[in-house]
Length: 283
Image 1 (tube, one colour):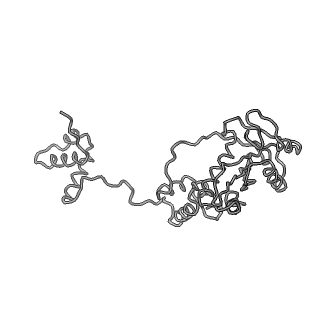
Image 2 (spheres, helix red, strand yellow):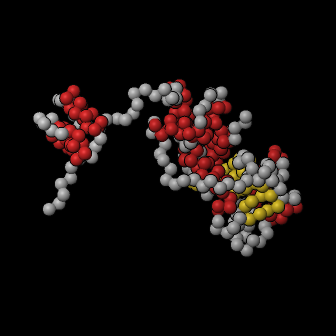
Image 3 (cartoon, one colour):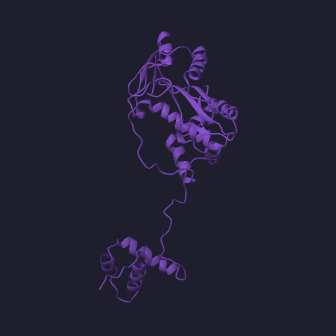
């Protein structure tokens, strides 16, 4: 014969029914039901006061007063930024509030506000804590093409990205029609004129800067070498080596590419140009 399952509410009703009988030993009943005397008398008092209601149901443990809770204006500001930029997390929103002159609380408080209002879900995994970066700008750049995506005019867009390893500043974000060396060289020349020459550029092993696992030299690689820029290739089939560039690709996809359907390369480039000042705020 299976055991009969009894809910906590049924046990409370049973306890009160036994405790209200004449001559009952309430302390002994509390021991039998494995509750404290304080809890037992609490249920008895509720049963008397709320005889017609569901006195046995669980109640919210939320405090009646929360003097340390963030001001309504601050919570509204956090939610406004989250609604304007739906993929931003607590750290970005905290920094934006600080730049706006708002006396922002800790990042953890911003995160709690987002969680409380259902704007965030708990992460499925704990992010890695290990991080490496070069000690100064222009010592190392990372460069790559993000995976192509289709446009309404039937063409493909190949997004060329360059990021500084130290500052994570997005140096270049270009909507290209191909992944050829001449196209990359043109964007590199414009980037060099604006930000100077880096010591090293980290790239993968694909065209136009590599020749697969054989690591052969390409025209683009020879041109960079003549300029005094060292070209370093990541480990084959190991994108973690270019983790900052891959993270930039994820952000570009979430905050730009996924937000609309583009009709042409010009429309993509216009969206990139609008987004770059948001990613690279000037303080």
